[in-house]
Image 1 (spheres, rainbow, N blue to C red):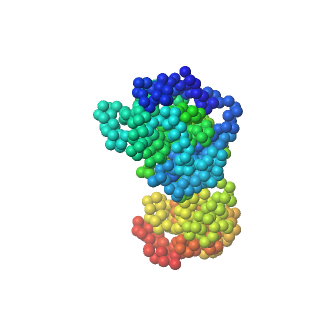
Image 2 (cartoon, rainbow, N blue to C red):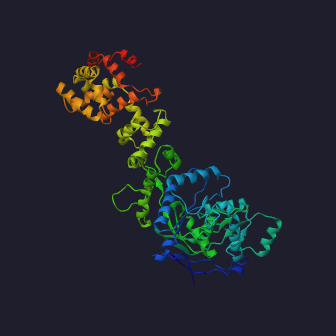
Image 3 (tube, one colour):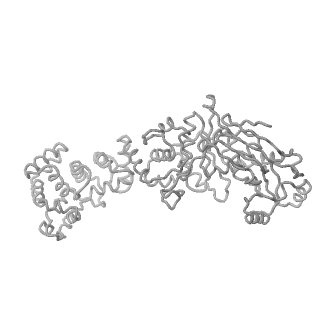
Length: 566
């Protein structure tokens, strides 16, 4: 009985019943079976500085939110343990891998704040960090396995392999390799080589036994080896297969923990066999559950935005994305849902990652983005939204008193930066006609709104209202109180008609602050002319043209009100 010690977190016990390597190529008289078991033990404290994890995306498309969460969990685990976060690009799919996708991946990870310690653009002692640059290393280890007898050259044609699959399907058996090359003689192999027949490298899988790992998230996972069959590690064109690359890369980069999506769990069987055959230390494995759509299917493009780049373009903040992704399958055990990246590093534990799939809720993400947006320092928030308003052509400048007051007034209704466009445009608009003729506006209209309008026009014509607005919030408060007394109105019976007459709406942010801001907008010239801003002056012109009697008889107001804006 042999004992092979892998990572100090994991021990592997192997019971071999195989023929010695020098007999394996020429004899099929020996059974191949062994049992592998892994048990997790509490790590000694000296490992705190030796944790090495990796995120290994393929540059074949955009960074999916599932991949981003995997990267985040790896990053948090490394930082919480004082370890290293390695970025490796798995670009062996030469047909689909593009430099453009790789650059986008790097940009998205940087945008999220997940800065890697080793990898492209950073370097490190375990490079190169692109699989396409490591082919010589794979070939070296493939030859090592061939020499030790753990792999053999397989000369089966595609037609032969397809026939094996068909036979297995008819017999309702797993599609395992049953060709002759596992037990071919040296003479048979040499004959094929001399003819130049293409061949692959196949790994010898024991025909009996089982393999068990203790996954850090999922617990014990076991596979029967008779369901696998000998698998290819090098294609006939000399290109290595994914599972072989990953094993060699993780081992030679001294990766201590492999944290990845649960869809990679079946790959662990092949990789564990390769680790043993090559004499590599086994890392600890942790397979994270998938991110699901609301219908509990796998999240895909048909459910809407799924890539980090898309959410970035939609106006989401990186800190909100990080916060939300962390909560998809993890929690700190409290009711708290608001975390910065720094707080996540302090709180994160792989023990608290759930086994079950997490539902991606875009509404919850939007809400969380609003929380992070409003938690920004006021100067940063004002700069962010002010630049947005200028870039979209609503304002002609991105800073100044108007921008500061507008952001302070509207921020509670903004969850995404892009929401700020609608919020400001809505404030600047004056849909009086639509409001007065709406069912919701009818009670306000019937509450003698025409009388309030007449008194308001009088206050405007006398200069009393404008003088109050010039004096700012205090002047407005004093005027409103006086105006209410003159009409013997207060509370809702005063503020609702005033809101409708001055803003043209039944609902909105603080009315006093809104009117003061409209006054400032009309005097400072900050609003772009093409926006359709209706100034206070034009609003009062429209009020003069309203046919109140027609409105009270459910007739539309005179259209002559519209040209008054010009």
